[in-house]
Length: 212
Ligand SMILES: C[S@@+](CC[C@H](N)C(=O)[O-])C[C@H]1O[C@@H](n2cnc3c(N)ncnc32)[C@H](O)[C@@H]1O
Image 1: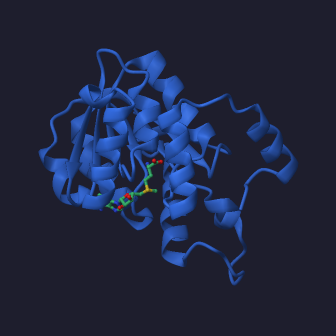
Image 2: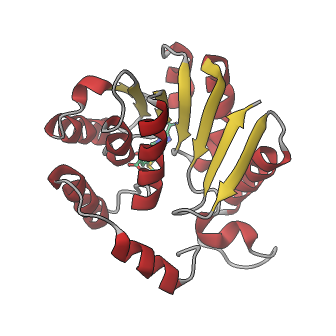
């Protein structure tokens, strides 16, 4: 469900520029196979951040590498370390990223991120979180010691199609435990507990926060 009105959603969608062949194929495959990838606007937000910061990125949740490609296309001295527990998806991502010509800037680490984060080599300038919603806090806590002092955190699906704002007892598309997890993180990012952050109505709701 769009978090913006349908008219605004359609208006923004119509403004999207032409994508390269590999990115377009990833979007088509994701749609056809039901792979959950970020909205194009979220990918573009990540791309703009990567263009400006040229960061070393830690991404939790690769899937087929769509958000990874948005970021990897923009880094030069930076790189993207991306974590995925599903071996088949990691293999798809590896193939797409090689075909898109960015494989040399991306390291795909297979396994459960809760086990692989402690072993990845930082420091990281940007942490992008987009895997199991109930595990978000754990990823952030595990990654925190590997972040640079002024690192940026970006988190997807924090508005969950608007479900986070649903009154108690309302039927929602997202399960209660995912909603609880998103609501807790939203308060934490906005209240400034360790982060200077906000939640933007981009895509499915994107948290953007700097480490305090
Ligand atoms: C929403 S998709 C990621 C989409 C991707 N960021 C994109 O926009 O192209 C979430 C991915 O996280 C992976 N995932 C979920 N829990 C994980 C975990 N604990 N460790 C590693 N990967 C995980 C899933 O297998 C899935 O492919």
